[in-house]
Length: 229
Image 1 (cartoon, one colour):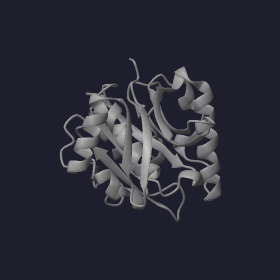
Image 2 (spheres, helix red, strand yellow):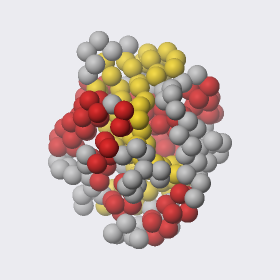
Image 3 (cartoon, rainbow, N blue to C red):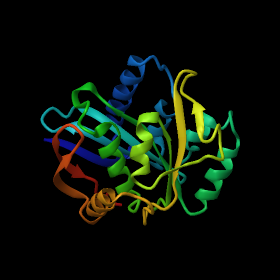
C-alpha cells in the first residue's frame, strides 16, 4: 500500500528534502535543469503545503506536489515562470489573492509509480481536497499538455487572456505549458461527477484508505490529508 500524505512544508524538512531531490532527478532525466517551482526557498515558506507519495515500508518518497499559497512569503511560481513573458498574469494573481489563492506546482512521480495515476490525477485530487483546510478559494496551475484534461475534470479553465491563448513555451523552448485557473475550490463548478464525489469524500474524511482506479490498474492508497491546523 502507498501513502499519500499532506503537511506544512516548514514542519517536515526531511520530507521536503526527499521531495526536492526526487523532483530534481525527474527534471534532469528529461533535460530540464531548472524550473521556478524546484528551488529550495519553498521549504522555509509558511504558505507552502506539500503532498508526498510514500512507500509505507521504506519511507521512500515516490512522487509529490505542492500547494503554494498567497499567504506565504514569496510570489506564486507561475508568476516567476511566465510574468516576464506576459505581465498580465500578475493582475490575475493579485485579483484572486484578495480572497486567498494558491497554485498546484512541482508535481512529479518516480518511475516506480509510473502509470498508477499519481503523476497528475491522485495528487491533484488531494491538493484540491486540502484547499478548504488552508483557506484557498482559487488555484492556479501551469500544466503540461497531457495534464490539461485532468485539470479540467476538477473545474479548471484555461487562462486564455495570458500568453498565446493561455500557452507558454516553458520550461524550455520545445516544451509547452498551459496557464489554468480553478476559480472556486469550494464548489468546483464544472468538475466531473467522479471528482466532486472523491474530493468531497476526502474533505469529509481526510484520513482514509481507498482503492482508486487509474487508467491501467487499481491502487490502494492510505490518505493522510488532515493538516491539524
